[in-house]
Image (tube, rainbow, N blue to C red):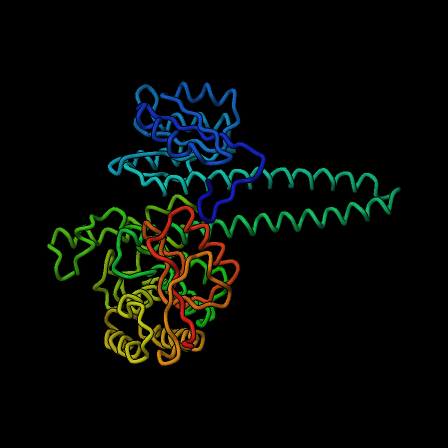
Length: 449
């Protein structure tokens, strides 16, 4: 069994250790990963038993419950870290025990935490990603050590064996390229994980389809047009993709309401999602700058926003970009009608100086015009000459144009309407349909006969 986007290395078995004092939880973990190739599940009902297993087995991923008798999850992970520092550590915790989870992150070196009750797909995706990260780190370490040894050997023999040195230099160049490829793969996997996670977030808030991906794309293009470098633009894109991560802690009842329909208590709860979103990723050092942008994306230019009520240039420029891109995508609702786009831009223009930074409007307008011009040029839909048909995923071909959003059986967005099919996204669709079968086929546009 393979999860979309995750391919475990062939011919290698990775141990994953689950530690929990409840036998029914451990049974659930065994069942969940029972058919996953390349994974061997180890279980322990206490921290002491788990440490005993670590003495005898190399473990790629450790998943520990926080609340356990005799030894807490954070204490166990702290000791496990000393025994097997390369293992990826994850803590399971109830929502009310977030502080305890942070303790596990700080003391035990946990890379992430998962709240109970967990979603099986989310848990499996997290564990499999962690296994691949562990393997990449392990391989990276091996190649780095290999490169170091070869460099020493080159120095030793360079004065006597020029040909040998030249040959080794060729090998070293190849290995350095392999290191670069592995690093690029690791970065790509992180981006794919963020994209997958943002799709899971939108299962909580279904008000706008593919909202996070659209806001991220618009925000990144705006940042580039403003002259920001690629690193700054990428940080803004990541923050935009995860800007609603804090909504995971909000009840579905509240998310279905508009701000006008919410009670005072519900408004207070809703407004916590920006701070909660920052806190959720703050323990990942490389994402802290993105977390700041998430915190402030609901601040208003006139100071009447939340959570901190800052205004104008006090608001980070990335947050000001995300705020206006977020509003545009929520108002447009995926329509491809030019008059609707202009109407949305007019509504946003009316809020310049109050809700939005006036300087952002020009860049938003430029990006929107380019994006929609590209969409119309690419799709070229003329209802007089084209019709919509439904095909099985095995019958689609490169060059076909998708007419409707394609979602998995559980609602994850696989491909947006307007996308042009190619070999890569067709392969992604086939994996998605195999793992989480959709309720329909693939709808595409074709010419009338």
